[in-house]
Amino acid sequence: MKDQGRSTRKRTGGRLHNVGKKKRHQLGREAAETTVDDPRFQVIDARGSENKLRALSTNIAQVADGGEVSTEEIENVVDNPANVNYIRRNIITKGAIIKTSAGQARVTSRPGQTGQVSAVLVEDNWRIASYSNLSIDLYIIGGVTPAVSIIFDIIVQYIRMWVYHENQFLISN
Image (cartoon, rainbow, N blue to C red; front, side, top):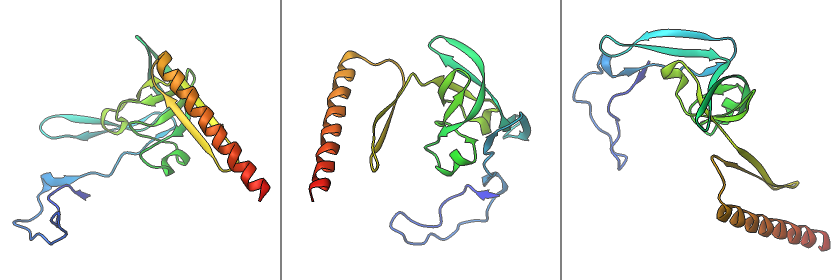
């Protein structure tokens, strides 16, 4: 169990002394770490007379594309900013980019808390430049305005010029 109580350190690094014992209501639980597999759920008691439905594993996502929502199959986890190891282990958290049958989508729900995976479609996944030592990915969620598109093109040109000149410098030396 994880202690969700007060920290034992002050913001300056000094030690805080406990004013009481650890209480049962201050304990937390281990993270659910929802994986991509056949659906398995767990019902746990929440505070009061409520229950929580945890998704231990699931392969179904509710994907929103504009105003329409469809049920899609999850293939794997493409990116997860919470932890890079979650990509290899196919663990779904809020903010993860998943590959579905409709395309890539960003998870907006918390599967370990709500028991379901809700996501929005990622419209564009552009790889700006891919060289031996430079790889920049840009995920654009939603529509792209003309001003953003022009700025994006300028940035791409500068990056390509910089990489070209760096490679020429390395070759000449």
